[in-house]
Each structure stands twice: as C-alpha cells, then as structure tokens.
Length: 86
Length: 227
Figure 1: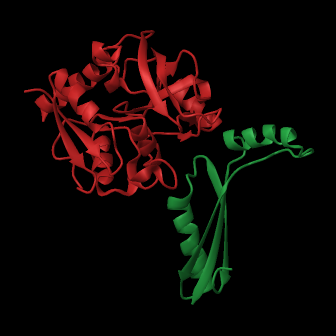
Figure 2: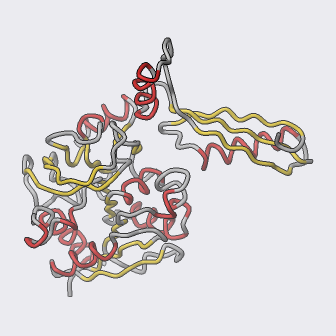
C-alpha cells in the first residue's frame, strides 16, 4: 500500500530559535501586530510503500528519529495517511 | 617518523589541505582519508576538517555521519584514539553522537568570518595537553552554524566533568556558556568551531593554533609508539 507522510519538525522547548526570534522582532516594523512565540521548523512530505498503516508509521517514525531530526535540539510530529501526498 | 594524522575528506570538505599542511609543518605526517572507505587506515589520530560535508543538506553533519568512514572513526575513538573535529567536523561529531550537544544557527543569523580569542579551560584533552589553563589564543572562526547548544543537564555535566575545552572570551555566536569546544568522556575526542590549522603560520597573522595541533601530534605519537 502507498502512504503519504508529513513530518513537521520544530526546535524543542527551551532551545533558542535565532530565526524565530529575528522574524518576531521584524513583524512590528512590517505592520503585523499581536504576534508572539514565533518558532521556525521544517516540513518533509514523502510517499512510503508499506504492508499496512502500523508498519508505515513505524518506518516513518524511525527515519524521522534517525535522520530527519537531531533529537538533541528538535522534536517532530509524524502523520501517516493512506494514498498519495496531497 | 612523525605521528600519522588522517584527515577525513567528504564531498564538500574544504579545510583538509590546511590541516594537512599545518600537521606537516609541525613534523607530523598527514594523509587524506576518503569518506567512502570504511577504515581509518591505521593512522595515529583523525581530524574531521571544516567545510560543508555533503553540502550541509538537511543539517550540517546529518548526512556525513552515515558515510562509511564514520563507523571506523567511532571505533577508533572508542578504542581511545585521538579524534578532533574542527568547525564542520565538530558538527559531524555531534551528529554522530561522539560529542554531546548540537550546533545551531548563530544568534544574529550572520555568517561569521573573523578572529576570536579563546581561553583554554582544561589541558586534560588530546588537543590541549601542551597548552596552559588560561592561555588566550587568537584563532579564526568561519561559520554560520556555530552556536553551541545543549540541555541544562548536559551543560551541568560538561562543567562538572571539566569537559569545556575552550571558551570564547567574547561570545560571537550565542553559544551557551561561551563554549567554543568540548570533549567526550574519555577526553580523546574534541570538537571546536574555531580553526587552529589556520593559525599556524606568522604569514596568516597568528601562530596560536600551534600549541593545539602540537598537543594532538604529541598524543598521536604516544599512540604510535605503543601500537
């Protein structure tokens, strides 16, 4: 079966985010008010062939933990769904 | 014969010849080790040099840690062999789990290319055995992701175990606790963002990298004799 996978990564709580900080500081100068807590992450989308959804989830979790994130500083949400990526 | 230092070459490394030249100037032998070979070729020390291994895609060091040579480097380190990661090499060693913590984008989001002053914090490592605690060394930095970070527990451990090897006198990049370099528990693996190999000749403005590389060669020579 073909599954589509979305991995969203973010810096772990307490890890400084220089990009998020810079974006947040620049927002008022651009006229955007009331925005706080900006954190920058990454998103990965890919297709995955697996026998069933549980296997696909385990496989996607493994590749995320071992490769897509650095667990010292990053967390991720891994969402697996049936079918082609949107 | 001097100690044999292997310098790992990844696609995208760009400081390997600087390291090799500095080692040879100090009387050591240097050889380039290709990342695709699963061996360190019997050298007495390994340097993972600066650059952009595998283009730094995904994260600096994230792909390099899976290069075939890294298993050999890990085994060499586990055996007590001296391993030093400089700049991108430091990033590779943290990604490979040979050193704690991680290197993030610089606070201020600027690529930094300047000379920094480092303070030697411990002499009980393969890179600082011939220096003195408190020595201030002028060594260049050249990085975008040199902002050392780790969790509170790791930082407490590094301090308690005297594993912060060098600190910036003036923090250029936001590194936690002004950390410029750390070592592993065995003190035979050291990573640092500044480039000692670029401060080994008066023509380039500083020779303060010499005591660091001389320390590595001295440690490596001991290994060579006992092998």
